[in-house]
Length: 266
Image (cartoon, rainbow, N blue to C red; front, top):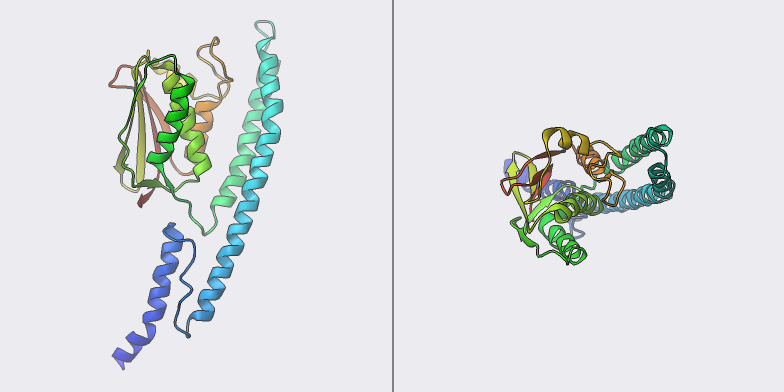
């Protein structure tokens, strides 16, 4: 009887393992080929996964449209702020307030989308390579030696568009301010991955590092931009339960460390 029970429950154990793989991001749906006893359950599970994926994609589109619709007026206000007489803070306060509200509502929308059963999985090394290729062309006037030490199989449990935004903001700063070298590496920290971006630029003082993380704060007014890059990166990392920290780099410039949840090895 014990053998019969174990043999009878084996299809359910295999189905449980498939569902666990879906939850961890290793597969998108459970296998269609199942014993007749559990085939209806597997069919219903796959239908539920498809429905949730459709709802998730719809939510992401709404969030993207909202972000796109609000970025233009926010950028317009930031440009108008630059033209204001010295000492006027009305528009600056308005920009900061708008940015805070936008981040708050986008964060809630992203949290709702990411709270579904389908867990995202993004390989880091390939995203870093693609972003560095673009930034290298943008900064073609500088001879930048770029090194990517991230293992090709390392993945994080984050959406690709969020990874691109976080890494893009930090790498853009590194390429802009470095003298000749940018190095990207990673390390495992329990269930998290720490992505480290080092450059050999002038770096920042501890006070400047704190200011750089505040929305709308630009440490060099002669450089283009509105000062939201690092604050956006920090907020996105915190949305996934991670963090962004700044420190002095061993290369002499700035070190930015992004901690994100690990999705294991691909």
